[in-house]
Image 1: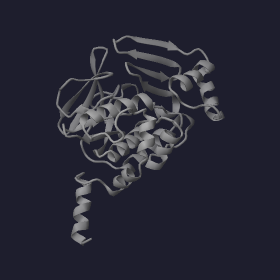
Image 2: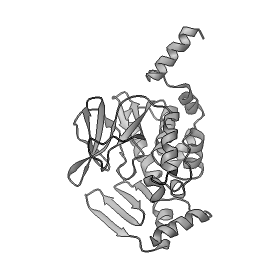
Image 3: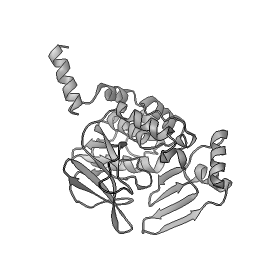
Image 4: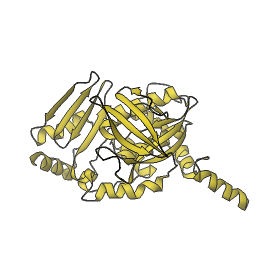
Length: 299
């Protein structure tokens, strides 16, 4: 490669015009058949990379693979490289948090022929609008023939279960609620309609990020004593017409008609059963996890 060509490619990669070589390699080696089996995909083995396919994949992914923090709960560092994420979420039948869901879904989309740009957002949930928060959340900007879409399969109980148009102030319905984007200066603010009120989820700039950009955030969030993920059990999963969330012992079911059922799990057995049966996460033969769950049940 000529020296000028080398620097031209590097500049194009930095601007997101061409996919970084690591992403290309991940897409080429990605176990697509195993992923489609994991999400119980019933469509074509190699669906067209368009908006309809994207929405169907998002819904299948969020129904099949839960959001979970069982490793941070035990202060275990969460690696976010492709091999580690694929092993955990596919081979082990686990879930994960935003970096893991984002990595897996980005690699799956690229293997199917989508063009994907990885982004990082500043979480604004329950924060004042002038708060400066770190870029600690991963999401995707996905190109389709019908236009680019914001894609986020890893925002816990408010995970977006369809692609969103990058359009200012457009209310957009998904299978699990309404969202909208607000463009303010160089940031896009994502909001969700919660109990009739628009709530800020995060703000994001459409600037390309790469896998290495998420490593420090994941290490902090999965190990630091002040991280919300190390001090609390946080699970979420979508169903066809509802969502479930579990925060420590507080189990909530959000239904399509807007009703919410909440209950406090009474003891360790009920908590362990919910983790295993409702959220589909393996807990047997993990004595440290069982001990942590039992401790939570007595707090």
